[in-house]
Image 1 (tube, one colour):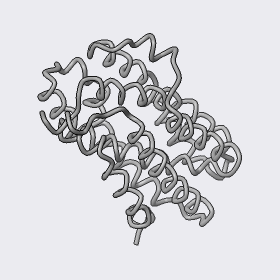
Image 2: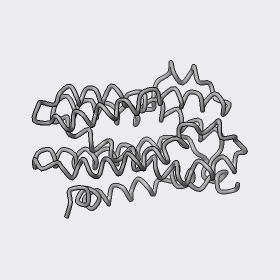
Image 3: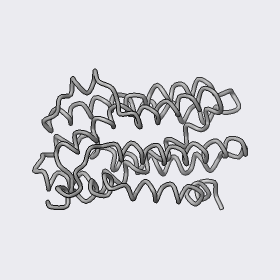
Image 4: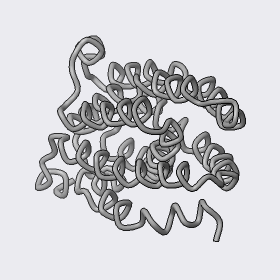
Length: 223
């Protein structure tokens, strides 16, 4: 069994729990209001705006023995730079207040997820960052592939309101292929354990973020 296969198998319970959150299920099915979509984008902004700083922090803590993983993080940094602005653009085009989001604060669950990642990378093992990458990119593929079109159709929003999600469909599928090959080169048991541990925790924290998004299920299902 490859390490990627092990990662998928040993995080399956947490992944299934995330994918059972009503806000995520209804989002993928297009059964959400415009307010819920903007609320999702708001929390996405507040964690995506930390992606490059987190990747940079992880890269800077890796030693020369981890040079291939430092190089991979450099590639991720290049790819991820500026994505938070895409989200702000989508918020504005969807009728939200992008400036209020930019200057505002995240919900507690989003703040805790970001804080956990910073703490683990700086205090324990920077290789754990790849556990977070695994969760966020895998989830964004599901949302982009199945959710963007369904939400656009149900809410009557144009493609200009989905630049963040739509771009991550094909982009993160490519990233996941790269990620699979990369993590299969991780042979240090401590690094493998760090990636597994962070992936499990971030699945739980990310589920908490989705649960925190205001969402009237009764109205969503009435669409």
